[in-house]
Image (cartoon, rainbow over all chains, first blue to last red; front, top):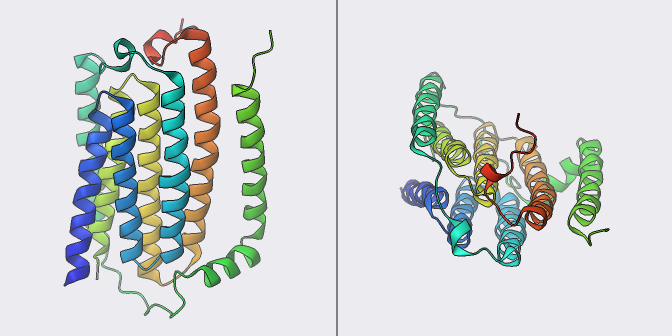
Length: 166
Length: 100
């Protein structure tokens, strides 16, 4: 089935890109691999029928947030000496150990998950209209909180990164 | 049809790559990207359950998570810029003023 094949394709590209993100020395290359990873996550959202969320993922994440990252990396003007290096070997081993442990635990937990076959999806599932109805009826207070949060973030970013007061 | 187990394992793999990246790197920018990876892992789980349960509610939360990530990136990168101004570095091992 082609959905299955596409899912495996997106999933493998996603994991490989994530791995390259955390192992590249140069942050610019890391950011570009992160864009690849986020695009693949958007593809998986599409396969799951969440069309609007996939669009938001591409526009906000791969578009805005990663652009912000690249701008900041270029603004900082990193010299090659301070770009690089992993931590020392002990921390690396600790990190990989934690990874193996957590992955093992999660795998054990997922063994118990029953294969859900829920109700058939409604025709407007994942579209902007049904999401908007939910957003402005049931979740209107969280929406307001997010709006305030974004405002605070804008002001905070300006205060933190704005002109220095000497 | 995508099986729920496979989705959960994919999200676990992404989350763990995020955790490992956060632990082993000393470049604060890449630590930040690792946080984005972890947020995406959460998003995959939410959308996967939304598909399996036939409900839209988890997708609302995914949109909230994306908005949150945008806010977090803005403030965090502002902090990084301020830090870089003071220290001329993005290496977190050099930022140990509060460490006793």
